[in-house]
Image (cartoon, rainbow, N blue to C red):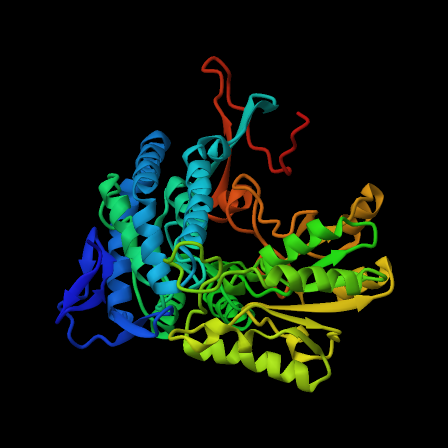
Length: 509
């Protein structure tokens, strides 16, 4: 088991050089792990200091030479074995996620399935790692390209997807020949060690994949370590900007995915029943703790009243409770402090003049132990309100009413975030115009959560992404590799030397 026990309490370790690490380091700080559904302490997680991070990076550096020389077929065969183990034990992993994050087991299983998609993509990465070859690019000169791993790379991942987001990163990185150090969220750390153990069981050599638990101290140690060549990050925009600036300042390659304020635009010709179903599903799944959750519904006149009523009716049917109980559709928020912060946005919106159509603060679940807040619907929200400006990251759906298609597009494009958006319409021309004019990285047409499949890439625009390349897919392969171009001439043994030529070489001769 990845979890270690001390005095009956769960103790989650680091994972370095193929085994649990840090358990003998009494000086290491610890963080508390709490079950969000009960508010009760689950155990502790060890926090890494700079020395322990250096130990993980050293193990990765030592493993890199042999791992990069392993054939692509060998590397991907290990990932395929990992995929098989993950499928076999996905229920166990899902229950771990539910116990520490709070999302329902079914939602956790969905998260794992999307992570497996990227593992499967990485198993076929050989096609994207192959270079090109041009014979006789110039007379007697051949030119060809190759792609090479970067070395030791790091991933810093958030609490809301403790299995999926790491799997957006490390399968592609490992398949490309890199060694990977993961710093997961300290709020739900067990999933990361579980994944590390499955990789080891699949045959991954010691040191190729490590886990360092912790907080900002561990993050800074990775950002500052000279042997870490690249950093991939997913989290809030302020931290994404910090990671990007700190890591690029140290010469590292960085891919930092930040926050979101995803708008779902409903045009007058849309099927309002379908749109209402989608708004509830995308707004309140995983208690709204998704970077792709719909948090703003843009109702284009005259659909506002009918759409709000339809959404409110559906919200009344959402079952809220502990994620491990049958029939529950929405679990708690991850911490008490976060629950209170989300509730404060509802209070502020009401004070600012928004209409609280459905008040999650008064939900029956909010009275029970744990960090519960019911689904909340705010109407007549204006862009100046904090509930619109900020990423709430909770079960709060804000409705903004506009008079036209043009106003809807302008509203979305004026927002600082550009992660995801959706348009609901039965007009193909309007849909095409929307997806062309909207300045957002991921667009759904009658699809409320447009997360790309594994062979495309995930990422937004503006303050939702710092760096040039998106996650997984072709962009992921490009991020974790560097190109080399070779120009070669093999003279005919019978030919004489061509003599000294000081002119600039040309390909026409």
